[in-house]
Length: 77
Image (cartoon, rainbow, N blue to C red; front, top):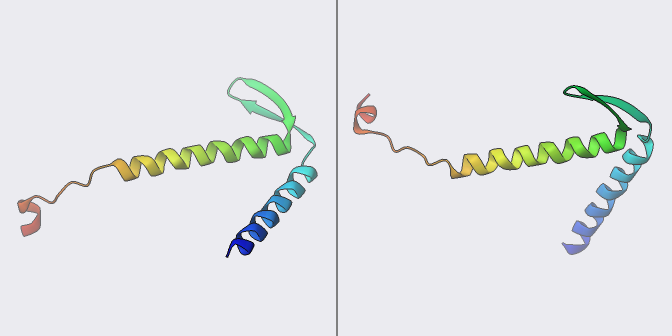
């Protein structure tokens, strides 16, 4: 089981490295009112990090949200 996990991590790391190496060209990105030029790989990394953080916040919010018990009136309907 440990070998499989290490192999999967190595494969994902290698694929990520290939994507980053192939996307080194500079792109111009508009961030609100500013135009920023950065490598596409960096833009991909930043977008992935921001979406992971947003997903984490949504998951934490959904798990902490208390479920409201059904009132007796709603059960009769």
